[in-house]
Image (cartoon, rainbow, N blue to C red; front, side):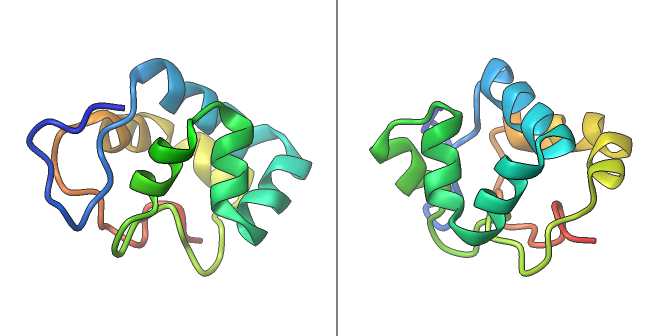
Length: 100
């Protein structure tokens, strides 16, 4: 993850490689989706982030803590937009990115 130029209340941008991996898991792996819904930090660690990166990813009103996770189909359909959002250097506090 990069920390350059980010809002302190949002998470740093993910690398394209990690964002693609995370979206692959969220769009296809039921066990990972259940873990993500229950404990996003544990899911991010399982997906490959370090402790510090997982903590940074969940700072403030992170979009990575949705109340209801979008369906696999919805994540697949929105993949390009999600990838762009997750890898950009803009604020990552849009709570509806992964919501149904």
